[in-house]
Length: 407
Image (cartoon, rainbow, N blue to C red; front, side):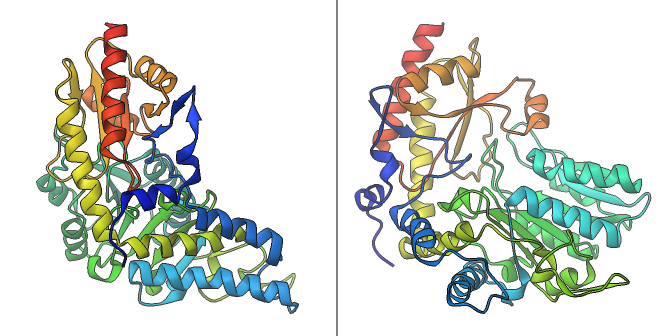
């Protein structure tokens, strides 16, 4: 592990050098997607210039080296999250695809009429809608863990929700709209004491916090590559072998079959049972390089740096009159979500963009969260390891200017 050197890290991300509207870019929209280091960009170019071929079953050289590179990613992910087996790693299109896969396949196998599914009040739409669709199809019931006005889950209410009817719990590790770090080990332990499996949405955790699925005892864990410095269009579903074997496949087609006749199809073994069709090969290969990049710096060092940066940004933004932070949990990660009295979040976002500062405004695909706080949306500044206190200072000055203009 090398020492955390912010200048070296920033130099690795070419897009950070560009200007927007004649101003140096300050990129604070990392919760939506992260920028890519040169090593990942190089790997993408290398795939198309040196090894482009379809993976699996090809006997020719290019197919073999592409397959080998793609399968390295599976092994890298296994190590990165400490899964017991590499075949428990399913390569998907992203977090949304992974959650839909579990909702459909687990739901088909294990959910019946009047069964109950538990999610939390702070979930992204991607961890709400698939379960609603499943409940509609099966006649099941969706239960929601409430949260308080700080953005902390009500754990006593969660305990009360668990029952013999509870078939699965699906919760986010880190809220994309509030930044709350949920007590995921406790959530899992309580569910397991009720013989209930748990899916962990780690889309906003994987790039900030070291994950160990065996220590967590997670039954399923999902995340996206593009949130962790890899390209879009690739993600991961981790599932315990016993659950993946018990679930029917998600889609039919190439790779997920062992033998096909017009009378019957025999499905492939794990992990290929859930990987129908040609994957996003180049993005999958690049994910391995993104993991290597993160590992070289070290997630412990990244988390410490980002926590310090979030504390600095929080203290600075509270100096601005009229600012209200939405999400004030004791344990947070890399998200500063706020409103300003009397000003619509969109208007702030537009002015910040004119100053070269990229933030996100709106409901952040978490409309129930906004409904609880009785607001239309927030301004969200989300941090990554390449952000600096200078970025925060520029952002704060820009926000002060926007507030002065819009008041």
